Image (cartoon, rainbow, N blue to C red; front, side):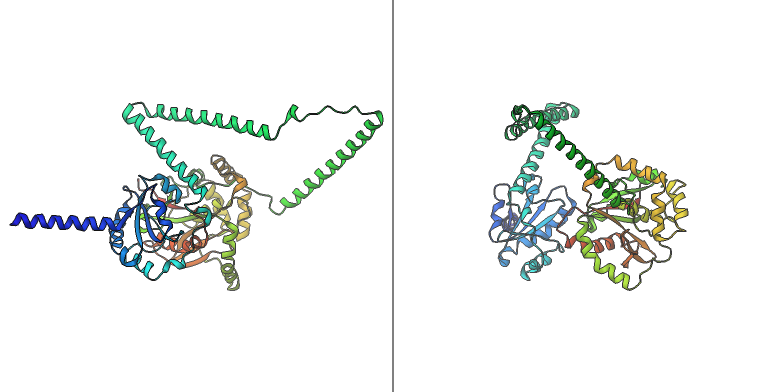
Length: 470
């Protein structure tokens, strides 16, 4: 009798699991197009992701309500379907999409069953902007991205096979793929050159026999050439003069500096202090950031659009006569491409009591700069050859193209009990609210959220200046 009861209980539990699994739809490369019709909530996850594991219980519970809400709830394992992670531009896990009749929106709200249900019942998704049409998973360009993602996974699988199954060394496997890549690149380049040469012929194909000129024609041609040369020389002189006028207001320009911790140590900062990447401002991601955290440097894109967003805020600051708070080191930027260096100096100078700046070039310059005005400090920095040389050496070691820089660095730090935003283009530091050592990183994330929500661009990045735990 007891065995029958246990057997019935097992059967009942299995039926419950099967019911839950039927409500949750698993999508793959072949079936993902189903979401183009009707209303869907789709979660992208990976088995190795801790945040994904924490979400699974709430997501399965939400799936049980799918029929009552008249929607479809689905999941995608990006390790099994790498092409879909590229097609949907999944850069963080877990990522959740809301899809309504082929219109895609990224879900950015709380991640609990009741929050998901309220999001659908109250149609909160109507307040979220759809993703741009060029990022639609069904577009041609995203299909190309998906193909490259699948290609990368194919190469990785073959590499693992060669190393683990065949037993060849890793360097040999890398050499094989490097050789294949170079060969294919040469072949493709050859065909492209042939096509261009065919469409736009050069050299002998375009040359025609010149007509023999009479002495009169030769004299006329010679006069025309001399006149053209004079015009060219005059135009060049005008251009040079104009360039000189354009560069006079801002004679100093540095190379753009990447997030390079080597620069910080080159100018004398103690070795125990490091820059670490912040991959998101969720609690589970921030838990991996070492403590204490002294400052956060945010790099954002689309500077012109950000200027329009921040302009009303800066105008109000000017009307109120905002001043630099006592004890805060701030300077305005007069050096092109140096916003990263200004953000770093703001971060270090305002933490000089917590961070040992050593006795290097930064400390020596800072001791003199504190006595100068806000704008004079930038001039003093531009004239400091040692700091400029350290900046240039580190910048040349990076990969930033100075002709395409469209990003700007600002920094956040704690001053007394206030969260300050220091932007070297602003009239003064901006008070973003109250903060504490325990909530500093979370408060920075909340302050950054305004820009992140208003810009349809995912290329934000953030660095934390911390004391290394090792």
